[in-house]
Image (cartoon, rainbow, N blue to C red; front, side, top):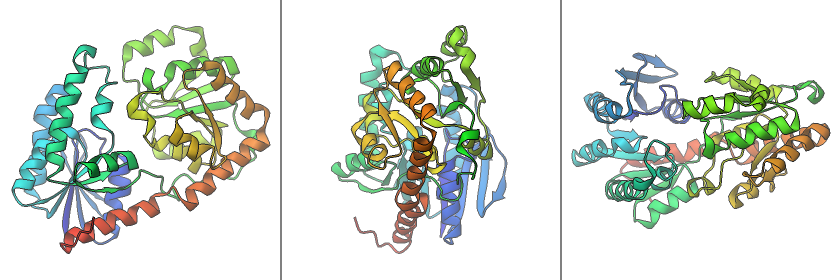
Length: 369
């Protein structure tokens, strides 16, 4: 069966879309295609990648690039179309009306996420979120929904959608910790992902300074002006920016760090999220300093693999960093506990079985929800 994933927003080799989902489907015997932007036409790990021109501005991307992605995807005449971006919802509806199987892969709780989007003026965010949710709910009922978290999946199930949960957990073999003495690790903590205020950058910079360690950032700021303001502070001297780096670079960063930070601020869209960076830290065998959200505490404290703190409390974050500095044996054991939890429960090898089962159900016209 020919299947086609398509995205107008994500990077061409996005870990969830390409490395996890598409490669898993190709290995399972499906003829797998992926339509992306700003890349090249190539076959990689059994996945046929098709690229269209990428527009720089957000508006042009939403209006022009999304159309080009849809047009290229439609040319492939696949049996199943699997899309990953809310801006592609209108094209998903068109494909559904043409009798295609359509899967909507919901990575984030879009309406709640809109409330923290810096590029949307605050006075209109509620209205934009309401409109987005109305459109999303209407079209999702005509698709099969994959939720990246249990909370997202439950939301669509309540609407009566056919929905399955496929969590974005790490690939077991990818970030396996390097065997080395914990004592030779650098006195540094790390953060990987998009960088902005709601993801705790202000608190991370201050806490690293207070703890006297280096903070290494792998990712890009979503607001250049805020980066400029932070970089003018003396506390920025403790920060090292790597920008966007490849998977090998990320592995090396984890190997050198005594802890990974994921101190997202307490907004609604984060409290029930399952950030991949948290599980990657665990997979790499380093302890986690995480926000004290109820769900996250169940994972981190329940598996004895880190410390949960009030993400707005700089002193609490700094104290957690200092504790790992001063207790290397305990930190190392927490890292091992996290890795064990990944091996036993939080891994892509388990999640991929759900994805493949869904596709086989579509192929055989035998879905059981």
